[in-house]
Image 1 (cartoon, one colour):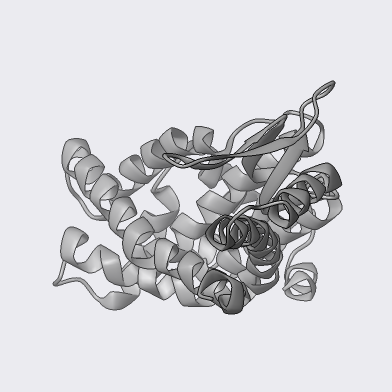
Image 2 (tube, rainbow, N blue to C red):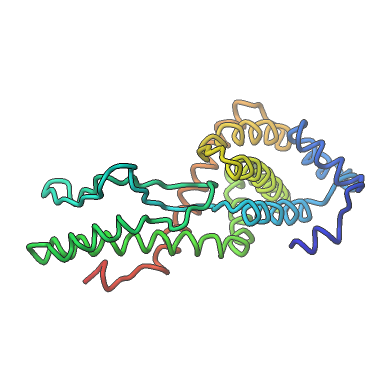
Length: 274
Protein backbone atom coordinates (compact mmCIF):
# COMPACT_ATOMS: atom_id res chain seq x y z
CA UNK A 1 0.00 0.00 0.00
CA UNK A 2 2.89 2.35 0.72
CA UNK A 3 4.23 1.75 -2.80
CA UNK A 4 0.80 2.53 -4.25
CA UNK A 5 0.67 5.82 -2.38
CA UNK A 6 4.21 6.80 -3.40
CA UNK A 7 3.56 5.93 -7.05
CA UNK A 8 0.25 7.76 -7.26
CA UNK A 9 0.87 11.08 -5.55
CA UNK A 10 3.44 13.81 -5.22
CA UNK A 11 3.72 16.76 -2.88
CA UNK A 12 2.43 19.06 -5.62
CA UNK A 13 -0.37 16.74 -6.73
CA UNK A 14 -3.40 19.01 -7.25
CA UNK A 15 -5.90 16.25 -6.55
CA UNK A 16 -4.18 15.32 -3.33
CA UNK A 17 -4.06 18.90 -2.04
CA UNK A 18 -7.68 19.51 -3.06
CA UNK A 19 -8.85 16.29 -1.42
CA UNK A 20 -7.05 17.00 1.85
CA UNK A 21 -8.44 20.53 1.96
CA UNK A 22 -12.00 19.33 1.45
CA UNK A 23 -11.63 16.59 4.04
CA UNK A 24 -10.37 19.11 6.58
CA UNK A 25 -13.01 21.83 6.27
CA UNK A 26 -16.04 20.56 4.32
CA UNK A 27 -17.52 17.31 5.63
CA UNK A 28 -19.51 15.55 2.91
CA UNK A 29 -18.31 17.72 0.01
CA UNK A 30 -16.13 14.94 -1.30
CA UNK A 31 -19.04 12.50 -1.17
CA UNK A 32 -21.31 14.93 -3.01
CA UNK A 33 -18.68 15.33 -5.73
CA UNK A 34 -18.45 11.57 -6.21
CA UNK A 35 -22.24 11.29 -6.53
CA UNK A 36 -22.53 14.29 -8.87
CA UNK A 37 -19.89 12.95 -11.26
CA UNK A 38 -17.27 15.53 -10.32
CA UNK A 39 -15.09 13.01 -8.56
CA UNK A 40 -12.31 13.46 -11.13
CA UNK A 41 -11.32 16.61 -9.25
CA UNK A 42 -10.37 14.52 -6.23
CA UNK A 43 -8.64 11.27 -5.33
CA UNK A 44 -10.92 8.30 -5.96
CA UNK A 45 -12.59 6.72 -2.89
CA UNK A 46 -10.51 3.56 -3.26
CA UNK A 47 -7.21 5.44 -3.46
CA UNK A 48 -8.24 7.62 -0.53
CA UNK A 49 -8.98 4.50 1.51
CA UNK A 50 -5.68 2.86 0.52
CA UNK A 51 -3.65 6.03 1.13
CA UNK A 52 -5.04 6.76 4.60
CA UNK A 53 -4.69 3.09 5.60
CA UNK A 54 -1.05 3.07 4.55
CA UNK A 55 -0.34 6.34 6.34
CA UNK A 56 -2.07 5.14 9.50
CA UNK A 57 0.00 1.96 9.61
CA UNK A 58 3.15 3.99 8.96
CA UNK A 59 2.38 6.35 11.84
CA UNK A 60 1.87 3.38 14.19
CA UNK A 61 5.13 1.80 13.07
CA UNK A 62 7.44 4.82 13.03
CA UNK A 63 5.81 6.43 16.09
CA UNK A 64 6.25 3.18 18.07
CA UNK A 65 2.58 3.20 19.05
CA UNK A 66 0.21 0.24 19.31
CA UNK A 67 -3.35 -0.05 18.11
CA UNK A 68 -4.13 -1.91 21.35
CA UNK A 69 -2.07 -3.08 24.28
CA UNK A 70 -3.01 -4.58 27.64
CA UNK A 71 -0.46 -3.68 30.31
CA UNK A 72 0.27 -4.37 33.96
CA UNK A 73 2.47 -1.76 35.65
CA UNK A 74 3.79 -1.93 39.20
CA UNK A 75 2.89 1.08 41.33
CA UNK A 76 6.17 2.82 42.33
CA UNK A 77 7.19 1.96 45.88
CA UNK A 78 4.70 -0.90 46.27
CA UNK A 79 5.06 -4.66 46.29
CA UNK A 80 2.80 -6.81 44.13
CA UNK A 81 0.60 -9.01 46.31
CA UNK A 82 -1.97 -11.56 45.13
CA UNK A 83 -4.79 -12.48 47.51
CA UNK A 84 -7.87 -14.66 47.15
CA UNK A 85 -11.35 -13.39 48.10
CA UNK A 86 -14.05 -16.09 47.86
CA UNK A 87 -16.68 -13.51 46.98
CA UNK A 88 -14.61 -11.57 44.45
CA UNK A 89 -11.88 -13.86 43.18
CA UNK A 90 -8.22 -13.08 42.74
CA UNK A 91 -7.13 -9.61 43.83
CA UNK A 92 -3.84 -8.10 42.69
CA UNK A 93 -2.61 -5.10 44.68
CA UNK A 94 0.47 -3.02 44.00
CA UNK A 95 -0.04 -3.10 40.23
CA UNK A 96 -2.41 -1.43 37.78
CA UNK A 97 -3.96 -3.05 34.71
CA UNK A 98 -4.64 -0.82 31.68
CA UNK A 99 -6.17 -1.27 28.26
CA UNK A 100 -4.26 1.15 26.03
CA UNK A 101 -5.50 2.17 22.57
CA UNK A 102 -3.27 4.15 20.20
CA UNK A 103 -0.75 4.66 22.99
CA UNK A 104 3.03 4.52 23.12
CA UNK A 105 4.31 0.94 23.08
CA UNK A 106 5.38 -0.43 26.47
CA UNK A 107 7.87 -3.30 26.70
CA UNK A 108 7.40 -5.53 28.51
CA UNK A 109 3.63 -5.04 28.50
CA UNK A 110 3.33 -6.98 31.75
CA UNK A 111 5.83 -6.17 34.49
CA UNK A 112 7.75 -9.37 35.42
CA UNK A 113 6.96 -8.70 39.07
CA UNK A 114 3.25 -9.21 38.37
CA UNK A 115 3.81 -12.52 36.59
CA UNK A 116 6.14 -13.71 39.35
CA UNK A 117 3.61 -12.83 42.09
CA UNK A 118 0.85 -14.73 40.27
CA UNK A 119 3.08 -17.77 39.75
CA UNK A 120 4.10 -17.80 43.41
CA UNK A 121 0.47 -17.49 44.49
CA UNK A 122 -0.50 -20.40 42.21
CA UNK A 123 2.30 -22.55 43.62
CA UNK A 124 1.21 -21.74 47.18
CA UNK A 125 -2.51 -22.32 46.53
CA UNK A 126 -4.14 -24.56 49.15
CA UNK A 127 -6.79 -26.10 46.90
CA UNK A 128 -6.87 -27.21 43.26
CA UNK A 129 -9.67 -24.73 42.37
CA UNK A 130 -7.59 -21.84 43.70
CA UNK A 131 -4.55 -23.00 41.73
CA UNK A 132 -6.64 -23.41 38.56
CA UNK A 133 -8.11 -19.94 39.00
CA UNK A 134 -4.67 -18.32 39.32
CA UNK A 135 -3.31 -20.27 36.36
CA UNK A 136 -6.26 -18.99 34.33
CA UNK A 137 -5.32 -15.41 35.27
CA UNK A 138 -1.75 -16.00 34.08
CA UNK A 139 -3.06 -17.55 30.86
CA UNK A 140 -5.41 -14.59 30.40
CA UNK A 141 -2.52 -12.13 30.61
CA UNK A 142 -0.63 -14.11 27.97
CA UNK A 143 -3.73 -14.27 25.77
CA UNK A 144 -4.20 -10.48 25.95
CA UNK A 145 -0.59 -9.93 24.90
CA UNK A 146 -0.83 -12.38 21.98
CA UNK A 147 -4.22 -10.98 20.92
CA UNK A 148 -2.84 -7.43 20.82
CA UNK A 149 0.03 -8.50 18.56
CA UNK A 150 -2.24 -10.55 16.31
CA UNK A 151 -4.73 -7.72 16.01
CA UNK A 152 -1.97 -5.42 14.77
CA UNK A 153 -0.63 -8.08 12.41
CA UNK A 154 -4.05 -8.84 10.93
CA UNK A 155 -5.19 -5.21 10.68
CA UNK A 156 -4.29 -4.59 7.00
CA UNK A 157 -6.24 -7.68 5.91
CA UNK A 158 -9.13 -7.14 8.30
CA UNK A 159 -9.74 -3.66 6.91
CA UNK A 160 -10.75 -5.06 3.53
CA UNK A 161 -13.29 -7.30 5.27
CA UNK A 162 -14.64 -4.68 7.66
CA UNK A 163 -15.21 -1.97 5.08
CA UNK A 164 -17.91 -3.82 3.05
CA UNK A 165 -19.55 -4.97 6.29
CA UNK A 166 -19.65 -1.34 7.39
CA UNK A 167 -21.34 -0.51 4.07
CA UNK A 168 -23.85 -3.34 4.44
CA UNK A 169 -25.00 -2.01 7.81
CA UNK A 170 -25.69 1.38 6.21
CA UNK A 171 -28.40 -0.10 3.98
CA UNK A 172 -31.30 -0.44 6.46
CA UNK A 173 -30.60 2.96 8.03
CA UNK A 174 -29.60 5.19 5.13
CA UNK A 175 -31.52 3.85 2.17
CA UNK A 176 -32.46 0.45 0.82
CA UNK A 177 -33.18 1.93 -2.60
CA UNK A 178 -29.70 3.29 -3.10
CA UNK A 179 -27.05 1.37 -4.96
CA UNK A 180 -24.76 -0.69 -2.78
CA UNK A 181 -21.83 1.12 -4.41
CA UNK A 182 -23.08 4.38 -2.87
CA UNK A 183 -22.83 2.83 0.58
CA UNK A 184 -19.39 1.39 -0.23
CA UNK A 185 -18.19 4.87 -1.23
CA UNK A 186 -19.45 6.26 2.07
CA UNK A 187 -17.81 3.37 3.95
CA UNK A 188 -14.42 4.02 2.32
CA UNK A 189 -14.76 7.72 3.09
CA UNK A 190 -15.76 7.00 6.72
CA UNK A 191 -12.80 4.67 7.21
CA UNK A 192 -10.47 7.28 5.73
CA UNK A 193 -11.77 9.90 8.18
CA UNK A 194 -11.37 7.54 11.12
CA UNK A 195 -7.78 6.75 10.09
CA UNK A 196 -6.94 10.45 9.81
CA UNK A 197 -8.31 11.07 13.31
CA UNK A 198 -6.51 8.04 14.74
CA UNK A 199 -3.28 9.15 13.03
CA UNK A 200 -3.49 12.51 14.75
CA UNK A 201 -4.12 10.90 18.15
CA UNK A 202 -1.38 8.30 17.66
CA UNK A 203 1.04 11.06 16.64
CA UNK A 204 0.22 13.08 19.75
CA UNK A 205 0.60 10.02 21.98
CA UNK A 206 3.91 9.09 20.36
CA UNK A 207 5.18 12.44 21.64
CA UNK A 208 3.96 11.68 25.15
CA UNK A 209 0.42 13.02 24.98
CA UNK A 210 -1.10 9.90 26.61
CA UNK A 211 -4.62 10.80 25.45
CA UNK A 212 -7.39 8.15 25.62
CA UNK A 213 -8.90 6.90 22.35
CA UNK A 214 -12.49 7.56 23.44
CA UNK A 215 -11.86 11.28 22.82
CA UNK A 216 -12.29 10.50 19.11
CA UNK A 217 -15.89 9.31 19.44
CA UNK A 218 -17.64 12.68 19.53
CA UNK A 219 -15.55 14.36 16.76
CA UNK A 220 -16.02 11.34 14.53
CA UNK A 221 -19.77 11.21 15.18
CA UNK A 222 -20.10 14.94 14.49
CA UNK A 223 -18.17 14.64 11.22
CA UNK A 224 -20.17 11.54 10.29
CA UNK A 225 -23.47 13.33 10.97
CA UNK A 226 -22.71 16.36 8.79
CA UNK A 227 -21.44 14.23 5.93
CA UNK A 228 -24.30 11.69 6.10
CA UNK A 229 -26.90 14.48 6.15
CA UNK A 230 -25.48 15.92 2.93
CA UNK A 231 -24.73 12.67 1.14
CA UNK A 232 -28.00 10.92 1.96
CA UNK A 233 -30.06 14.13 1.79
CA UNK A 234 -31.67 14.14 5.23
CA UNK A 235 -31.89 16.37 8.27
CA UNK A 236 -29.02 16.50 10.80
CA UNK A 237 -31.12 15.03 13.64
CA UNK A 238 -32.12 12.09 11.45
CA UNK A 239 -28.52 11.61 10.36
CA UNK A 240 -27.36 11.78 14.00
CA UNK A 241 -29.61 9.07 15.42
CA UNK A 242 -29.04 6.87 12.40
CA UNK A 243 -25.31 7.35 12.80
CA UNK A 244 -25.44 6.40 16.49
CA UNK A 245 -27.50 3.31 15.62
CA UNK A 246 -25.12 2.36 12.82
CA UNK A 247 -21.97 2.72 14.92
CA UNK A 248 -23.58 0.76 17.76
CA UNK A 249 -24.58 -2.05 15.40
CA UNK A 250 -21.13 -2.00 13.79
CA UNK A 251 -19.46 -2.31 17.17
CA UNK A 252 -21.71 -5.11 18.43
CA UNK A 253 -22.16 -7.11 15.23
CA UNK A 254 -18.74 -6.67 13.58
CA UNK A 255 -15.99 -5.34 15.84
CA UNK A 256 -16.90 -7.32 18.97
CA UNK A 257 -17.17 -10.68 17.12
CA UNK A 258 -13.86 -9.89 15.40
CA UNK A 259 -12.17 -9.39 18.78
CA UNK A 260 -13.73 -12.63 20.09
CA UNK A 261 -12.43 -14.56 17.07
CA UNK A 262 -8.93 -13.15 17.57
CA UNK A 263 -9.02 -14.05 21.25
CA UNK A 264 -10.11 -17.59 20.37
CA UNK A 265 -7.18 -18.04 18.00
CA UNK A 266 -4.65 -17.30 20.73
CA UNK A 267 -6.42 -18.85 23.74
CA UNK A 268 -4.83 -21.69 25.68
CA UNK A 269 -7.92 -23.86 25.93
CA UNK A 270 -6.11 -26.47 28.01
CA UNK A 271 -5.85 -23.97 30.86
CA UNK A 272 -9.13 -22.11 30.36
CA UNK A 273 -11.17 -25.33 30.06
CA UNK A 274 -9.22 -27.95 32.05
